[in-house]
Image (cartoon, rainbow, N blue to C red; front, side):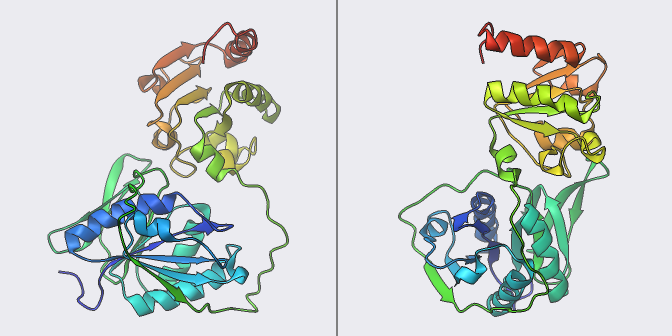
Length: 330
């Protein structure tokens, strides 16, 4: 079985401006499942501004919520968060620690694992408990061609989980639990100064109901304007494959795929995207997939609900014109 000195599932509940990130509720769903198998409690750690309402975490499955509240902690500063979370992990001694694989989580979790001298498996898509009570951390490898099953010998066993991988935990307003306030460790000199916060669309693209994405079929960065026009007409956002992001046609915040954002929109329109496994991993669970590609043998057509073989520079303007004239229904 697991190390008897460690018990429980600890979830880092990420927040921004006092609002809990939805990935936290997904982790609570999976964490509760694992905890039931281990007959162990579920803990949450929240680091953020004062006066946050954290009862929702109890409703969603947490038994105890450790709240490090101070307005100094409102901004996501990895070094300060690391000190506070390590302090609590050493106090709680959980056997498993789970973080969302958000931009912040991906930066924070390795710092904590390194300090605790334990392992970390990144971007997991599934978690299981084996017959010895150890955590099996499952993640795609080799461009999504295999699923690696990973065990960590040291404790706590740590993993980051991709957003939108699990369903959110259901609310139970009759659940009870403890919210424990913890005095913050305030690090005055971190060597880092936040000058300003840039707009980030990570949550926007992950939450979008319509995504219009461009790939190698887009010839120039300026040509993305027709995708923006189509996305605007459909009330959606613009995505991109890794290839065009690496060519600096568009920022990495738009990237869809295993190393980018995972999306589950009602409608995904792939424009000039061949359908590499890395890209499909981030969008294949869309409710409806429309593929536009001049190559009839492109792999994207294998998962598309509607496939259009043609030049996107002809197809998209025609679609835009018909949408403006309301000749097609969305």
